[in-house]
Length: 607
Image (tube, rainbow, N blue to C red; front, side, top):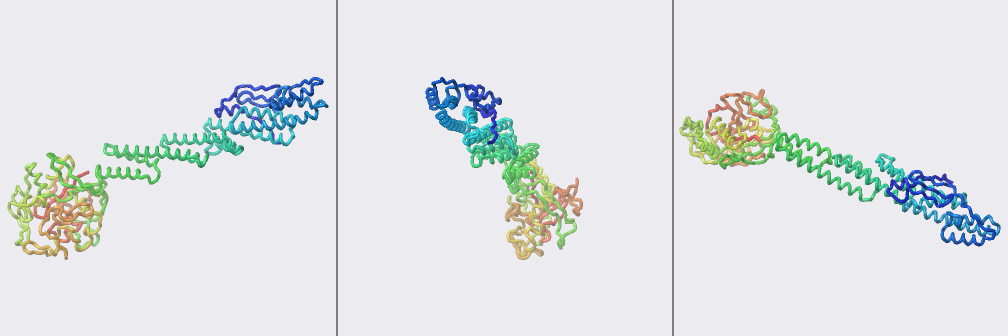
């Protein structure tokens, strides 16, 4: 027979939240099992029958009394109980046989009641049932310690004691926070109890309590934005009761918490961006999101892109077309946001038309995007400036400019030609590109725009112009080599004819655009970045002073300016430029007071 041991049953009930009568001493009778207090409950394993006195002629009466006690399940507690009476009668020769039969029935009933008490103790978590089972065990052991049925019952009591001890130890570990996620602890003890008595409610409820405690720890971790820790706790909890929805529900709650937290951080980052130091705040929020988001979360890319756009474009986005309001209700020129990035500036190696001033080829990178005029500044736009300020351009003040002469095919000096004139000196329509303006006239216009709009307008740097002209290509021409595609721009084409029938002596073969002289601004398709007429129409003033080479040229795309310089850079082929002058790297100089029928300008607006 396995060693029979008893544990403190009441303590286990207190830990489990069972009230019962754990603080009450139970003394059913002389020699009976006694369980007292919480951890001091140590049942007596020996039972002594209470003394029975039977009169000399009282056997029949005692037998009747024993049978009545048996019928009432009064088996052992008092001198008038069935077993004490049968034990006494078994010592009397006349009643011994009947008494022994009665003891056998009493023992069987004792074990039946004990088994019932154990079921009550195990399944209903009953301290009273456990006390009764121990009482029955002590009496059965006295009656027939070696009987097979008694041995089996005592082993069952032993298992129940072990079950109580496991549950009580597990509940104490649970109360101490020793859940057992790494092994041992409350979980291991409850599992052992459940294995010992499958389906036992107390053990199953204990495992559910451990699961709940782990879920609570996951929630506390999530409250501190430790979602990886929360996931670990939920992973532990998942192993406890597979198939139950509790952990799945908790996972959904925590994912909602995580998503709400991410949205809040994202909104804080977005709200901060327009403010001073807003980018730093947004980057901090982005780092926090990355720390709690799952890989591939679209919010990460969204906020990262917004930060990048703010760093590189302010409140704008690449490709955005906009105008600024001017004082008095007018609008400034239409501009388009060009992407930040880098390119190799200057002539390509082996370019047969390259000049020394286009070298050395060097890298340029724009860390911030900029907005360039979609079209060249028109006569109408320049007129608005003159009307508002009374400005007198260089050609107006000196009374002449260089205009095209159809008779000779040359550009000749003509009187009374200025910004209001077209390429031959006639009045120009408002949609034509403004001509006959000097670098100083162009600068006066962008200064006025800046004052009117409260934004910084300026002439392009030649790096910005070449970057926009190339629009992501790395060829001599944006379209590659050879003849431009149809509609590429207003350039010198072999198919073009002047009003008098003249043809170009040096032109793109098999190309014609239908114009001799400038076309209205924006008449041809824009390039892929949305800018018109970079490849032709009119050459344009740059903000840069002239330098004979690119040695020591800025690498950030800014204008290369020397105070008081007399020569500035012009860029871009015109309606009358040779193919070599239409290349992406071509550049030339002109005195700042130069005006003619091939030269205009466009604006850049800083972001």
